[in-house]
Length: 181
Image 1 (cartoon, helix red, strand yellow):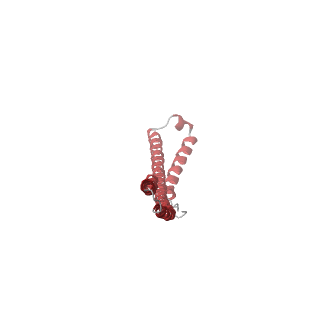
Image 2: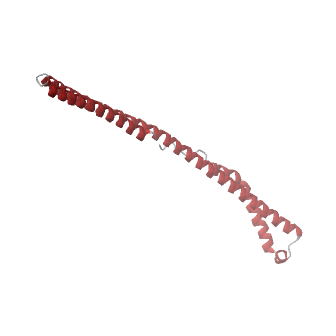
Image 3: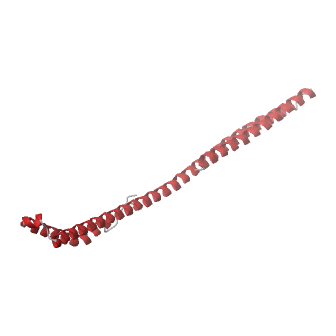
């Protein structure tokens, strides 16, 4: 997962700063020189000439432009980093979801197999028991008792198979409710 969050090389902000640094240094030197000239002459500071005012205004414009450029460059760099992180997070989510789905499907398949095996064992035991009861029924001499007992046993067989089918359907519906996500 650490591969996802690798820094881009070279970093945009650092490269922009390196490119702008000579211009920023030059502007700063000009501003300092102009400030030094103004500080040297009290009269010039109190009563600046048109050219001095124009130079100061131009320096201010240049400084603002440099600041705005750096601010936009920083905004772009931040935006790119945010997008990079979003893409990495989306990749992690997609990979994680796939793994969770696969594990969930394997779990439910295993549980369904266990349920089927348990039901098969119960069905075999039930069938063996019912066959013995139907064989004993043949020994009953009274026809009415034999008919009533046969009806009762047939209803028990029907109910047993209905319950097994219902349990299988209920388990399948639980899987479908829980997996749809």
